Image (cartoon, rainbow, N blue to C red; front, side, top):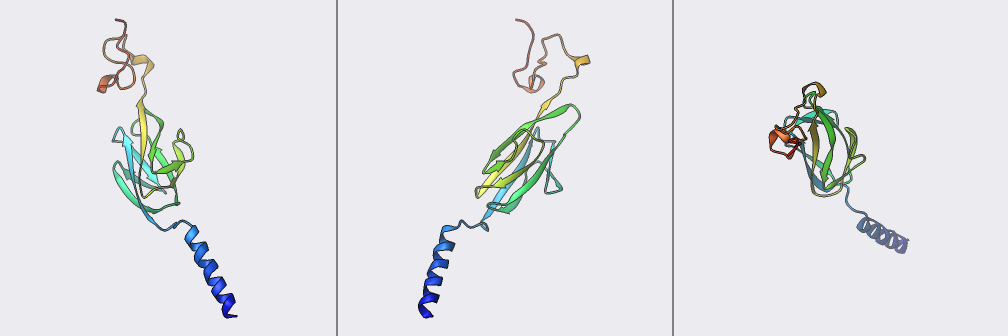
Length: 137
């Protein structure tokens, strides 16, 4: 019987050594670009720059919340985690590293009735320093 316990103890030691710890602490930072957007993290709305602590392997429900009606969701930028759908505003994130970040990216929507005929940067980011369509040369 002692031999059986020793063998069982050895087996458990080997089994626990080969399983990665799902309880290791990980920090995940949540951002919005532009910064005035918000992200719902597991049902709680968080502002740009919020940091949460999670276990590696933990799955988190995230929803990118429209900053204003003049922006549309463009996708997620992720580090230290995996995202079920990079193009879905409502998705799940799985923590894969001890430190990570998730950014909701928004692009400005152009109102067809107010588009410029050129010269003032009507493309994405044109009015805030990006390389928008500035019209014919």
